[in-house]
Each structure stands twice: as C-alpha cells, then as structure tokens.
Length: 170
Image (cartoon, rainbow, N blue to C red):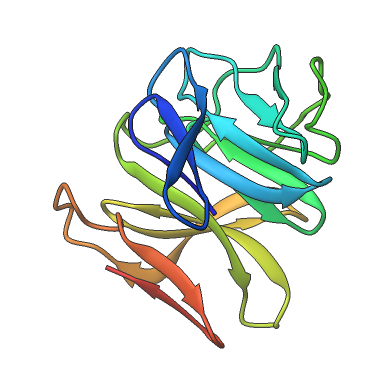
C-alpha cells in the first residue's frame, strides 16, 4: 500500500512506512493500477510521474493532472480548472492524451474523479465538485450535472468512495 503526505510518497512494509519518492511538488493524487504502474499527480503546473513495479520513477511531459481515475482501460485526468483527458498508455515519458470535454467550473470547485456505473450499468467517469456530482458522457462527449446537488460548502464532494455495489459521496 502506498500513500502520500505532501511531497513524500510512502510504502507500507510489514513493520513500518518507507519513503520511496519525494515529489517536486505536493502530490494531489495517486492512481493505480493501469499497465502495472502507479501514477503520481502533482497538480496543474507540474508534470506527473509514474512508478513501475520495480519502484522506478519516470517523469512525463504532461501537466494538468490534479485528480484522476482508471476508467475502461484508460487513465483519466482532470485539472483544477476542468481540463479533462484520458490515455491508454500513460506510462511513457511522452504519453499521448485524448482531450475530452472541459468541465467549465470555477478553479477550486473540483474535489475528485472516480469511476462508477451510470443508470444503464455502463462504467463512466464522475467528477465530484462543491456544487454537485457530474458525469462524463464519453459518446457525446459532454459533462452532465447529475441529480445529486451539493450546497457549495468548501468540503462538499470532497469525500467519495465506491464500495460494494454503491457509490458514496459527502
């Protein structure tokens, strides 16, 4: 198990926690697994890194990765301003990203990105925000505000989890 605390990335061993990486900026998200890699996102202005199973770290040439999730064999990412994209092979120093629809919200509104099923049972990307829960339609492609609304509180939409057959958000 890995976790971030500011710039350091730690691994849990059988007896303690070992630092395996010190990022050049605050870690905003860690995402696994896709292509047997762990992805370390550093926000909008810093390029993200990925870690191999040998715990070798490689810096990419791609920024605007504040939050992310795995979706349908892709790594999806979104910036704090709503720039969205996805890639099938993000574990490259020069990965190719496909631009998706931008989620035009105020900077700081986005709280996270996760995968869950839609009303038809198909996996989709969801974006939790201070104002509500948005779903990305990969066919159109557009973002749509779901019926779940938030109050605009600074912590609204910050906590979310998929557990069992349900998605939870607060």
